[in-house]
Image 1 (cartoon, rainbow, N blue to C red):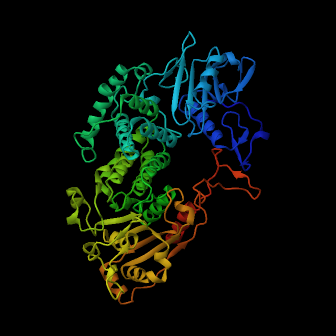
Image 2 (cartoon, rainbow, N blue to C red; image 1 turned 90 degrees about the vertical axis):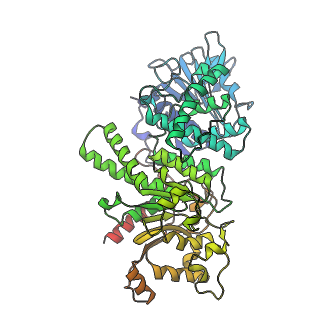
Image 3 (spheres, helix red, strand yellow; image 1 turned 30 degrees about the horizontal axis):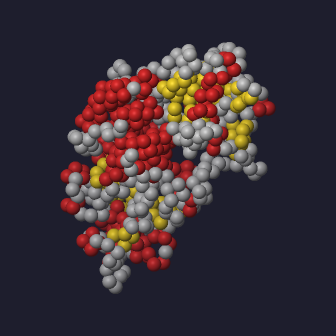
Length: 621
């Protein structure tokens, strides 16, 4: 068990002063800078992922180098020994993600000099734009290796399944992998992303299928030689990827292969091998994965990815309209699935409900997790569906669903505004049908080039001709999707859709509101803050609309203006956890101190969970 050095009650603060961050190692306050945040993340990793005891660690430990003294970022001492320079085992230098290993003052040579000055230091880790591990031999020579060893080990070992740990900073790890491929492989960013996807599929399959020893690993001596790197590719990664293609023939072509050169392949495997992607928290995976996608696709077609808290709010609100017994049988579609955020939110909600049910049945934590995983996979593959016009995003969603429990078999490429007969994918024509889904939850493309001007497509819908002297020859995609998305909802089912606020309040768009009132019962309208989509760069005035499709009898009454009056839930949250630049915003006291949660982490200032609670109380009553 890790233990922190004793901290007096005077050192414990319920708040953090502005511009400060609490040190994971000492518990004291430090200046909140990008460099300090990286150091604190790696201090946590040394304990949570490598198993070192925090009481054997120090930050900014002074190392004597000739006549001078230099401060290291993090050191790990020999267990239960004196905290001296000659008892240091491991040194970690953690830099900003834009610092190069070749940087004259902060690059790897700085770490090597520290290692040379410490007689008992055998391993070092430099983390910046890349992650590079070093080992010092008995003769003092310093050479690169795959990683530092776990606590209690003398060498980095092939990981065992039980030793894999959830990633605490997967976002930075995936970014390093992607940038390394892009910089060292000589391919475009999108292609680099596809190659990284292949290895992530291999990693997840290895975790799912492991019987004894894992195959997704590289040894230190293998990484140093061409023969070892080739052994990694031919003996482990290629067979794994062949199994991936057999398991997911709807994602990969039979002749696809891992195209990375040997050195790049070894780096990526060494970066990811110690993590369990399956057991990493869902929000950590979702945020990391979608940020990686965002660096390859910047909304040129109106594709902006829905923030996780918005997905969770919309999903929880619409699911709360059904009983717990009904939820397991609901058919759900996202007809503009993007990276799969809404579908992942559905899976996460199902998992929470199923885990509660399995806990009541009893068993060990592992048994409960395994039973829940089987049930989630079954429900996802039976009830969750996605479509997107962009084939890049289709594969992106499929990978996201594989990491979160599956349902990837029901994600198809196609234009959901077009007639199903125009879809190339036969599976889509068989499985995605209009008037059949209990819930459609989606964020259609906005602005940019997201306009529909195909007369054949426009002719399928009522909105282009409604209240117009001449049929509209061009419509923004988000306007047409109001009608297009509702067509997939069965009578009495629900649509939850992200829309620009103008659709709900612009006088020139009254015809859309008129159509909605004739065909749906408006359940809720949430006006989101302008900064909601700041990280993705789009949707300046977003809102979420939840509407119930009317039955045929109700639609006739609505057409005649005779539908019974009803109430609509409306809310205007002020905070969504980020500012207009995409930086995190935390709850503060009147004096400006940041309020900490039960885990001593800053409390995100986000009103959306409060909206869900208020909605539950409103419609429950």
